[in-house]
Image 1 (cartoon, rainbow, N blue to C red):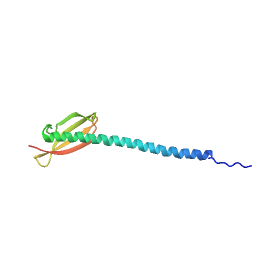
Image 2 (image 1 turned 90 degrees about the vertical axis):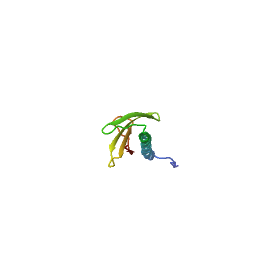
Image 3 (image 1 turned 30 degrees about the horizontal axis):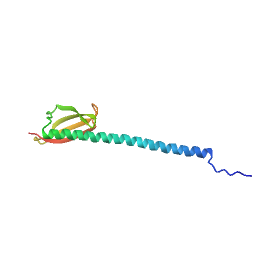
Length: 122
């Protein structure tokens, strides 16, 4: 009397587990990278908001940016984080217009975003 085998052999199970573990590792790595990228984009967006706020205040005359080579630095709270910003002016080819550069970061000596605008020099 012959018995019919309906199951998998040990080698088939091990190969299936190896393929599954490789696939799951790739999925976990991809998800981890996606989370890092999302956090980076979120921080860059908030930094852009802070920079645009500084530019708007300078354009409205609420913020006095010193003439070159001096720079204005400060901190700003936005969405529960402290953002460090630095603003400086540069002359442009047109003597009535000055270039305003604003850099924003979460830490000292790091530039997450650099924004440029132009101000009418009176």
